[in-house]
Length: 452
Image (cartoon, rainbow, N blue to C red; front, top):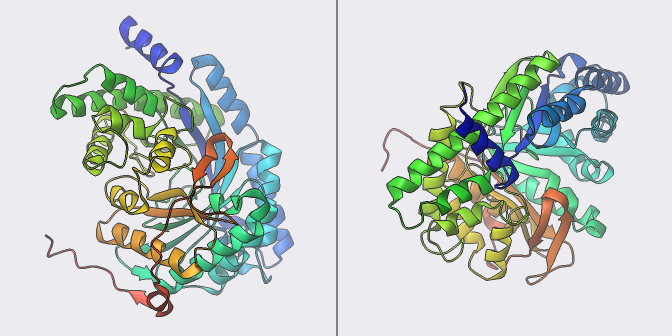
């Protein structure tokens, strides 16, 4: 039972500290939509999505109105299309992406994720068709997101896939050069991809998931920062305890929304994703939390330690609020979607290399990073390979969402508006990795029994 003080505290978190629920994401299995006739398969996909998710947006708005908790996005995640489309006799899968886009618009969701493939150990013919279709698919659609898992701790790193994804990222940027390469903002490369992640661009409905489920992603960087302002100068024990207590309150709001959405849609509740997800708005920044701990700027020495504390405390606090926690669960550090990160890059305090170090202790990876448009495909592949290695060796999820900004260099920026924000173009190490990437093959899985 909530007491009056807790109710008032929650109201203050919503109205003053920018507490919101980032997303309600409906996961839908499309495995029963496979058909040798591609058009028949696409019709089954459209019919199933619009049938199951027809009330998703309306229910989200009802919960927002009744409980006063803003729910920023309503989204859909589907079975990786490389699995669903494998039975169809067609050369590319652009038609499947257009079907997903049409269904997303029909039900009114912001994004649909799952134009995806899992290739960490090798490619099927269907995987290759999907990967080849990505640049055109993300150019011709507005709401479709794509993800490719190229590595796992048990399988190692598929370096052929890493090499191919560098070329795909470049092609996606060039096809949407008139829109600052926005296709790359809808494409992410993973190691150890979670099957129940509700956040884009990497959301998918894994093959171990039920027929349909509701997953909820929380937010709340502004709420955590506001809590830390009250313990300024205190020891780190107090900082960690404060973050834990705040994360518990945020996650409890997410649990309430998840249960209500699940009940009203008559769809099983899946997981709460405990990630702190920033927005470009001032006061809703993960970087500002780190600075509140005592750093002059995100990226300064000490940033990795501060982020490690934050990530751990969020998980410890949030997990008390829900029995089913999943997805990515941690702290996101996207550059373009975080006002503090943008400032840190523009001031020269935050480099690509420091961000890579930070991804060892956060929940995702190099996210929404713009680099010069003339960055080669092999260099992008090498950046992906480095990030995949961190995920594989540390047995965690990592990802890369990188934008080679067409026609732009360091000092310029790309702007997408909304939650995707603005990303200053960051410098990239100019030394070549072309011979390294051209080797291909698979980097073996790491040994975990002898650790130091």
